[in-house]
Length: 109
Image (cartoon, rainbow, N blue to C red; front, side):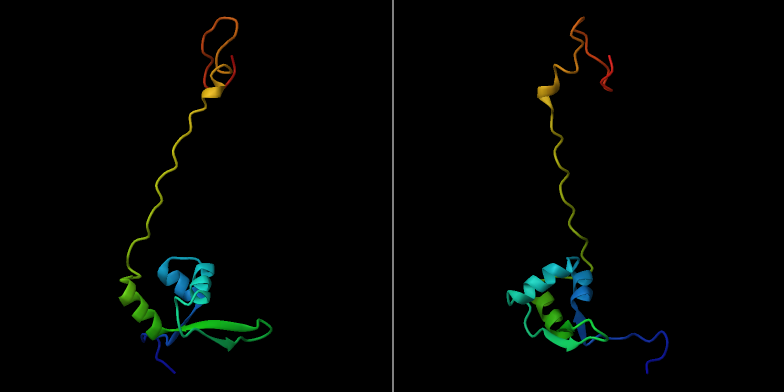
């Protein structure tokens, strides 16, 4: 048994552990395995009635990261903000029909 505070090295990662390491969803990891991009994944029996657990050897992950030049320390990419849509078809609604003056932004005249 390892002493408390001693660094543990995983020999294999679960789908969830690899997903967290790479910053992707577990489903994405499963699709990469199914497509053959992550070789040598294997299943082990799970405790209880949960079926099996898919595991990926640490050596495979380290080799893939070196080949793909992926580092778990890289910041996640952020998506560009979505453009704000102008609602040009609502301009008649925002104008007082009697005076032609624009109504306040809250829609009450």
